[in-house]
Image (cartoon, rainbow, N blue to C red):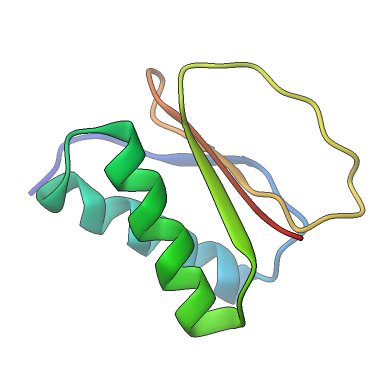
Length: 86
């Protein structure tokens, strides 16, 4: 079991979609180590569950985006995850 604590920093998604995003992030803790693999898994899961055209960026970065998009910023203190639909 992962002892990391993830936090949604910003999101305009429904609570259900936020829970899906966090579940995807937790699942990747056991499956992948590379940021590219984590991002690919999360985007594909959201394509499958919530219609296509999701993009995911994973890394240590800062970003700003307008609030009209469904973008959750999720972080564990070291790694940030930006998930968005086009």
